Length: 415
Image 1 (tube, rainbow, N blue to C red):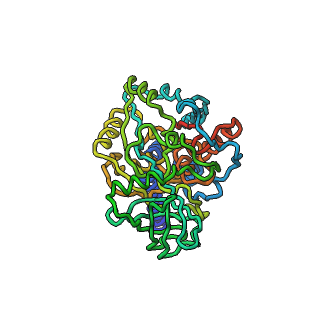
Image 2 (image 1 turned 180 degrees about the vertical axis):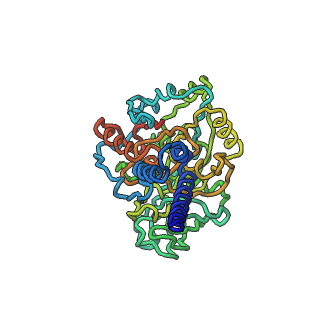
Image 3 (image 1 turned 135 degrees about the vertical axis):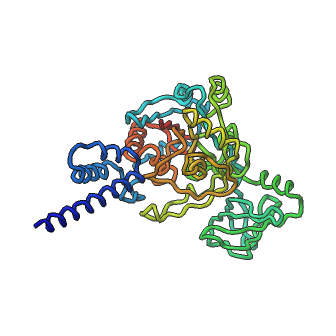
């Protein structure tokens, strides 16, 4: 009889040890609060732990489920996709999301100054959009071809990674002519994707002269969803006031709401700014083709964050001031370079980080963003920051309140 009791006790002890080991494993994964709850319960720990596990799993949004592409679908009337920006940048409307109280406010962007304190930091993406869209003709047939310049692969050889439309007409060896007097000629030397090609531009001048021709022939790459011709004002409007590092084919639209006057007002209140660079690529506008988001492969984008910016961000967080990420591109840069200790490290390279819920952010305390199109990577990143349910609620309210979406649309501040 004593042997049976001893065996039962041994089995129970091993079970309890296993459960405690599980508790500590969960703690390492999800934080100390779980272990604190476990350690302070006066009742039998075995049953309490099982109860806590049940509650914990129920309260963790999508921890054990993969987010699906279809979950980011919502009804967006085309009339709410803004074709033009407001007259003044800071006149855009701004929806404010308070994550702690799950409440929403309706403001204008100039009111953002009321949500920051002296010592707070806004991290901005200083990339500059260049006139990346060219229109040309195919040799012999004269077929009209649109070319989107993505990035220069080799300056000396004039090699460029591009997208072409219509792609079915463009094969290796074809020559394309640009400009009314054929000022620029390019030869197709490789196929990279279904629409992707590598072009070698045949130009005898210097690199500066070549870039000048590109600038003269190219057009501001306003997204096609706007369904209107590009106008002269777009060259200014589709650019942040602090843009300096040329390389983007799409503007970091959250930054379009900042005017020089607003930024000066913020600086006078001891609000600081720090810069990163991420050259936004066309991958942000390419349709995601897989339902399981873990299987989506995003394009790599060139990025740079300096030691100076890292030091400023790290010091701001150490001083318990807020860090505001201006745009999903800025947030992506910081999350790419953050270490396990929460410190940002400098990097001059590339990122293919794809952020979607659930995701634990460790860098920014607040996010400035726009209202994004359904099922877009930007919307998914914002959902990860705001919380999926809260963002979908906010988007439903935005549609009802007729907020403007996308490039020239209104702003959202997530606190």
